[in-house]
Image 1 (cartoon, helix red, strand yellow):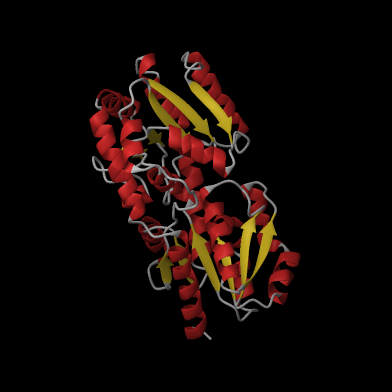
Image 2 (cartoon, rainbow, N blue to C red):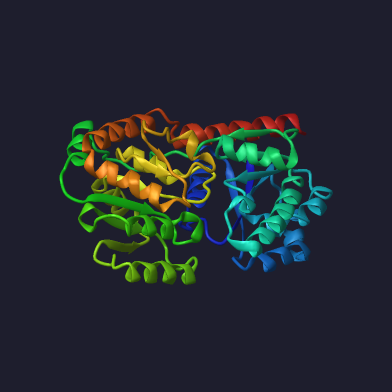
Amino acid sequence: MHIGLLIYGSLETLSGGYLYDRMLVRYLRRQGDEVTLVSLPWRSYGQHLLDNANRRLLRRLQAARFDVLLQDELNHPSLAWLNSRLRRQVTYPLLAVVHHLRWLETRPGRLGTLQNRFYRQVEQRYLASVDGFVYNSQATRAAVTGLVGGSRPGVVAYPAGNRFTHLPTPDEILARATRPGPLRLLFVGNLIPRKGLHQLLAALARLPRPTWQLTVVGRPDVDPAYARAVRQQMLRAGLDNQVFFTGPLPDPALAAQFGRAQLLVMPSSYEGFGIVYLEGMAFGLPALATPAGGARELVTAGENGYLVDPDDPAGLAAHLLHLHTHRHELARLSLAAQQRYLAHPTWDESMSRIRNFVLTFKRTNR
């Protein structure tokens, strides 16, 4: 097959969605498929909307000889109107790869409410313009169905966590969980409001200082104003001796952080799935995760982690203090976390679901 994949920027961008796209491209190419990347430049949301009038982009897609064009749903503002013209002029189907919907992200105040109403309308138009869907979770499927109904075909292909080797043994996980001293916390995500680092810092400010240490792994340049704000929040609270920012890390260094930590804490306002939860579980890290979105398909409260309200720093602090003082419970959650990872599909298993879906779609929609 000749498959197109439309994205913003570089496929090597550090995020869970781009990791998913990279794994898909690598798998398809290993199966002998030709994959052509169509990259649009990163710009503001309003500028992306102008792409719908981009005649050069339309001509490029019209001239392509794809068997199918996959579109990362992140590109929805660039395609919401363009797709309707494209579909009239090409024979290949358009399939959206949906990681999560922008309009479901929490935004503060009346302005945030108005923004989300607008984003919802644009995403609804985009989702109605494609022929089928690849979803990263059942929660994402439900969100899309809630906007455009369930008449279009789709497949749920979960992200996986098996890109790391040399995982800890159960004995090593037990020893790490019960080791005395501050609870070693890990946050892995770009420094953007949705990931909830500000809420985590607010929770940590409530705890006795000797009970915790936090390592933050992620890009500060995605939203520089927010990155500055959380650093200022940290300084005002006097937490700078216990919070360590590493910036983005290559896989070996990230694996080392997973191996040293005792608990993954990601109080995001919304996650379509949350690959990092699963990657942490591979190392036996329970997750303190959001109940909004796909994390509920991974994290079972009281079994391999907890689902916490990201807007409740006091509740988050209570969970952290409890696990600091009850290390045997932390050990139980840690062992269960790795077992949950082992029961999850691998990247190849999930990506094969996508390829089989595309093959079936192509065969039945000639």
